Length: 216
Image (cartoon, helix red, strand yellow):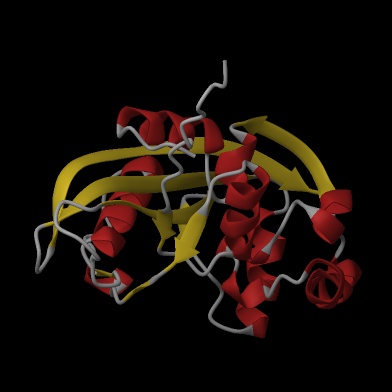
């Protein structure tokens, strides 16, 4: 007797992020995704509260400004993910560096210890024939801490090597640092959620996708 195999459903996640590391993490986790843009102005966010709540608010702000492709059929579903990462050292919240000199100052400020938080927002949306309507939303954040073993005379070569060997533009990294690839050799200590430091807390994101019935 021949059995008929039913194709496994494989949903597509829209990722509204330019982060190289977030793309790598989703790919390595076997989660199919497509890139989309957002036009959120992060300066319009009320920068108050603890680091976790702030990154979560920024992720929600990005979600409200995501540009999605037009839906194909009535009641088509899609899933959307946004995220934001910030760091904090000596009471100062630190995002991406303004320029090269600011990046140097940031590294000197954070190397003895930096708090890192990544907030995320996931939505399941349905196409009503003209617009994507939100059905359900999951938000969250995760926290980690790390320190770097990097001397003053190593900072300039560090920036250049991050781009050459790992493909990271330090000017586009929260805190101007990476602890993977070339940057792994400068990682001194880690506490808390390692993936929150990288830019996407994978266990929390997976749980959120599961809650929204996403099938990867």
